[in-house]
Amino acid sequence: MRIPRALAWLLIVMAMFTAGLLRQFHDLTPTSPFLAPAVGSLLFACVLFLVLVAVRERQIGAAPGPGIRLGSLTPLLLMLLVEKWISSGFYQPLFALAAPADLPDESLDAWFRLMCGVGLLGIVLLTSRFSRPAASWVRRRLDGWKAVMGIATAGAAIGVVTFCLAATALAAGSSIGLLPPQTRGPLLVVLLGQAAIALGEETYYRGILLGELLRLTPRLGIRSPAGRRWVALGMSSVLFGMEHVGSSSGWSDGARQLIFALALGTLLGMLVLVTDNLWFAASLHAWINWLLLGAAPRLGYGPAQAGLPPGASVSLVLIAAFLAAFALQRRPAPR
Image (cartoon, rainbow, N blue to C red; front, side):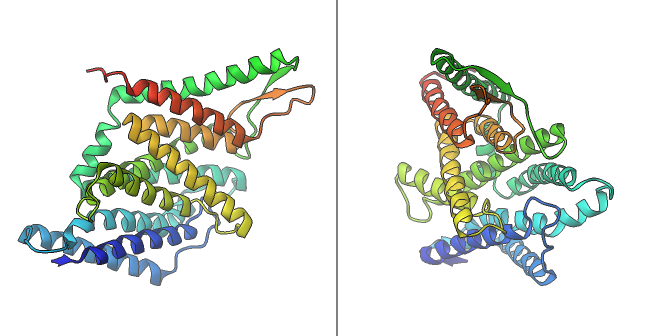
């Protein structure tokens, strides 16, 4: 079955908008509202319909003609809707069954975030099977040596910025100290949970979704390589921004969250495209999450031991990360 390109664009945009809206029903707290059964049933019906379309398209093969095959869109649509069906319908019930009743709210939240990160990694493994090109695109950016290279480069960027800030403060006559982590939940659980979330989100947004969008854009009428990259990057970043706006935020807080998440998603996506390394982006993403939640140590300046605002530290580290990324890009990859 072939459909016009305009209808194909409409289906993709609607699926992404729906995924962004459904994110509000499984916020990263165990007190989020459960997804209404009717919405869950509708999601399951959409997933079942797309699976049947994919099976039928595989049976009859590609048919010539104008437009784009509906079967070409089903992997992307399934990646979006299956993730939402599982996370919105199963995370809270599973956590309610597994979580001890005597844990304080801060500990429950930390454990729930860890479960969400592990769950998203599992969803990525499942949904990557819908598209072999997208799965291969992700696999090449998660190769073994790239894990060492990405984590080490991210750590070097953070370390260089920290050293430069400390040296500047000492040269200006200010005293420096190290502010210890201060988290609302168990430190180890927070660290592991945010690392799992960061790796899961990078392999999902900048992995299978970005890879699948890069595969689809030529069929959707975008032929130039630069145009393909910017459209795929923009669409995945907008979805990342929508899904990081809290359900309880007001207009001003929601706008700030959207702009920050949109900018961060775009920058991390650019790093992935430049370095072909998902570990690099995931390591930076995890450090940013730790910093915002108070789980990462920070430098304190002056007698009051005041630290820089998180946004300033994130900006400086991202600048250093881009400098490192472009420096490494000129070197041939080791065999």
